[in-house]
Amino acid sequence: MKLNRVMWGVILLFVGLVLLLENFNVIEFYWRNVWSFWPVFLIISGVNILFNRNKSQVGNMICLGVLVVMLCVVFYKGQQPPANKFWMGDNFTKDLDIDIDDDKEGTADKLSFAQPLLLADSAKKTVLNISGGGTSFKLSGESDSLIQADVERRSGNFILQRESSDSVTTLTFKMKNKQNKWSLGDGGNDVDLRLNKKPEWNINMNMGAGEVNLDMSDYKMRSFRFDGGAASIDLKVGTLVPVTDVTVKTGVADVKINIPEGSGCRIKTKTGLSAKDFTGFIKIDNGNYETANYKTSAKKIFINLDGGLSNFEVNRY
Image 1 (cartoon, one colour):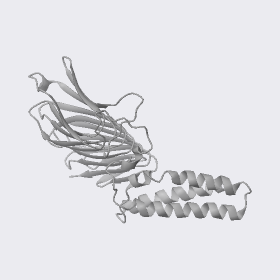
Image 2 (cartoon, rainbow, N blue to C red; image 1 turned 60 degrees about the horizontal axis):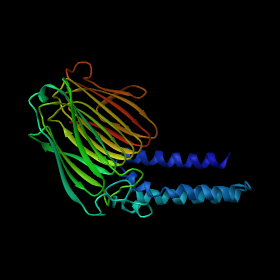
Image 3 (cartoon, rainbow, N blue to C red; image 1 turned 180 degrees about the horizontal axis):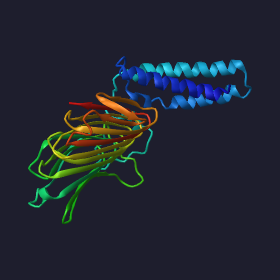
Image 4 (cartoon, rainbow, N blue to C red; image 1 turned 60 degrees about the vertical axis):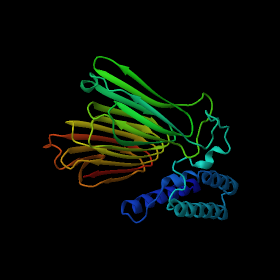
């Protein structure tokens, strides 16, 4: 058997074992810690090239030994609580050409953005587009304005724009960096969002690394769409609209979605080596799950999950 196949088999067994132990709450594994160990794969590839040319048994044993030792280190470190808030870590910026917009590297300044609630906004569809990497987004409560965003900024520039038509109000909140420059702060940015409860919200988030914590149980949320890479998502859905669509596409992420017990819910999954925990759901067929009250409930939630190496949880409250 070729050594490459054996090594990939060991890696897949390792990932599967970690996900299984997580599912049964034996361990709590922080996948963000694994990110800092990406040079391990360079070391393993180098050892493979050095010792596998002669196709000797000794060389094969050395390669496998190095792989097992590295995976043991990753397994140990992965169970340690992350020292950094974001997946990239604070040390990622040391070897890069960093340009901080406000010449206050590592320090935070506070910014506030708001758009007023107009008389016609309550009857319109409201679309909120959010983009930006290395940022933590949290819904901190209600606002008399249509939207309010309080930013603790360590890097980048933020803007809030508004466009209106007869039937749709579109809000765009995003972080802008200088072109062709890295702009990463020490610990990332924190954004506290406050939304008005009158409009029907359609939220689209496009971001790389970051954290999202949105309790939308008291808001009329028609749809939520997340498209990103390495992220932590905690979303709570309410019952104030007849139908809610939730779509999450991730690379490596920890995704937790809480839905009302009285709503019927269907989950469609398209996942690779991802862990899935759908308590209270019935598996219909490959990749599809439903609650027992899905067909009879007047309120319905449709969830689409697409991820590579992620942890997906859907709980009922």
